Image (cartoon, rainbow, N blue to C red; front, side, top):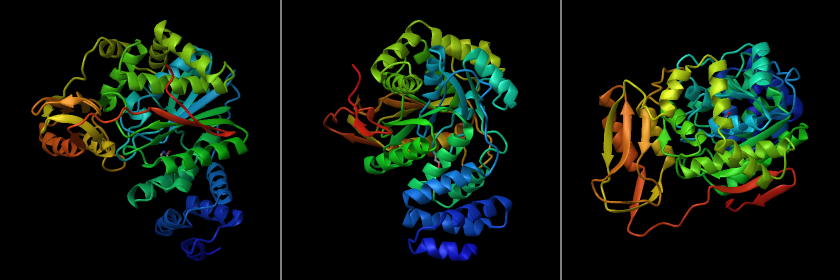
Length: 446
Ligand code: URA
């Protein structure tokens, strides 16, 4: 195989065979296929797409590129949950403990923030002492004892994705259905869970900006998961508006704790409970509606909060710090500035990618791979989509260790808001479910 010929083939939209895909991935991992050729291939895939068969083969070749987790030492049904990436998306911190409190085993491998989107590992590391690097035996023991543990992707799990994602991040090739589907599903298959719930975000703060592409991505991932013998469902959820009010790692943990204490923002609560309900449903605990009610119960009776606290303590996190955040304390050592509305009217649109970028400018996320982040930095939204504002009224508060960062971040934040004289239409939070039997439209649970 000459990589040059494969790039040429894909550039003209022709399908790669199973053998060609396998050789390409093993050559890339071993270093025989250089980064510049793999980058050219990623761009060819971005433009020309891949058939269902090619995406499946790419996913399986990537999943086979390293070690695989064997979760058999964990007793019971093991559910995993994965989001395609969003802004203010702290749902794992809520739906994981809720599902675990109701008897599902949550052996969760999570990632760090990517581009303008946040990552669960960065959020948990905002808790002093919280360790996300745990040896497999201890990980299994923690899940058996607590019901949930959240760790970073272990060393040699899907090395093909680690290398390819780093290239995609710097070659503008992240937002491609074949590349996202194979990246996520290779990790989920190698991660070894019995069931997988996918949260496919749609809108301005998602990698998939249109409903059509989000549905296609969800269908592709569910098809691969089902074909690989896993129970797999996807919810398509709104990311045209940041989820909740907090963006930034410690601020998001604080907001997740509010929901776990049975209050907090209604949008975050609903999406988290719907995801928890799917995790319970695939574990055979009841219909999605029954599971939603059970999930509400785990917030109401404090059992989900107790699981979160136990998980944090078991992974070395400071419960004193958590108790402070739960009581409303703000992260320490940050300067803050209020951002004022430049206009009267209603907020009629939020460019959520722009808001995520503003949080990165405050150092809540990384501009470059491997960069240190400031766990206390971020944004609290004082007003959101549909809210009426007066000129000069605060729309957000920005937090950063270095006040010199506020100028550019405020400008980026304000450029992300659109104002209109009329109240905009109400939004739906969860649009659809994609299961092995296809797409089902969803209306809000009342
Ligand atoms: N999350 C991933 O793990 N991979 C992608 O390609 C996009 C989001």
